[in-house]
Each structure stands twice: as C-alpha cells, then as structure tokens.
Image (cartoon, rainbow, N blue to C red):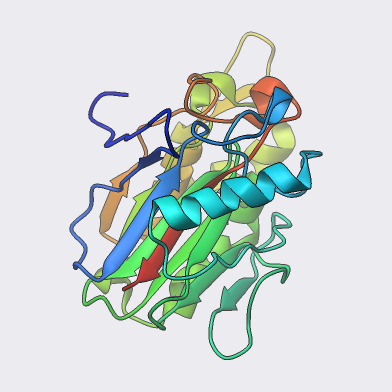
Length: 252
C-alpha cells in the first residue's frame, strides 16, 4: 500500500489518512481491517453490527478506534439502506437513523460511513465550515446520493473538496444491464463489456463524473481496490460475509 498513507499496527487499529488540502480543523480517516479483535470472516477490525459478528467484539473494535484515533465522540453510526437520504447532525439527530449520507457544521460530531466495496466519499468545505460523508454504491449513485449530499452541505460546489476512498475496482465489479441502463448514459466510459456479455463497472469514474457535473473541482483519492487487497480491506463481493470498514470525518 505504498503511497496511501496507511499506518497499520499489530498493537492497534490502522487507517488511511486522506491526502487532500483541507484546513487543520478538518479531521478524517478510513479504517483498515487490521488491529481489532473480531475473528473468522469478520477478522479483525470489523465495525459493523449487522454482519453476524460477536457484539462484544464490535463494541471493542469501536472502542479501539475511538481511543486509538482520539475521536472527540462516538461516531454517529447510520442504518445504511443504499438510498439517497442525507442526515444533518444537529440537535438530537444521531445514531441509528436510516440514511446514506451525513453532514455537519458542528465541532465534535463524527460523521461515519461503513463500507465493504461501495465507495465512501468524504466532503469538506475549503473554509472548514462544514463536512460530510456519503455511502456510494451503484444504487446510491442512481438515486442521487452525491447530489443530495452536495446540496445539504450548503456551500457552492466549487468551494468543496471531495475524497474518494477505497471501493471495489472495475476489474472485479461485474454488473448486468440494469446497472448500465441506470448509470451508463452519463458516463459510458465507466462500462467495459466483458466476454460474458456483461460489464465491468468503474464506480470511481462514475462518482468523479457526478461530482464534476455538480461543479466540484477539488476531487482527490480513488486509488484503492477493496477486492484486490484482502490484507487491508473487507470486500463483500470477494468474501460473501465480511466485516465493515468506516470512513470518518469531523471538525475539531
């Protein structure tokens, strides 16, 4: 994982640190699968409670990232449904709500998105006033999760920075006509027909095209494949049952 900013450690959780020109008060990371206590298919730093893992192990893994990365609070864990609803963290809004994106302008509220092949996309205003995160699979893209997240951030798109985290790469993401029909018109270059008459789909190209069309010009990341790197990443498509990683962002 050279050049990714990875900091795995046998003694604690590892992560990627986004390489993007945000202000100091914007803090962000993406957890790797190492440094936790889960076993079997979810080994080892699984953060998902919905994948048939031992609840006590998940609780310990979440404690480890909270302490190991000096988080200001427990991340707000959403109930993700592959949709396009955006939760704004303010007042009583919090964990367990059904949403696939989250934004906040409040310091100390940790936005969290769980993934195991879908793309996590983090956002930050260039002036450090607001941050957000979106869960971006093909269904979310088709439903408009990126458009809704950019709108919810409430700043001109040109004043946003975006970071695309690890997701399944095109060589390993075979899709059928329903996906190409839903998304291919706007980015035909994201689909390469294979020998089976299906398509290899590039989620990063699709996400970049959507963000660019919205007016977001500061787009970073997008260079990691979850399927191809079992040491560092969970992958639902590769393994069937698997754990979940998390993209976290907050304002100090």
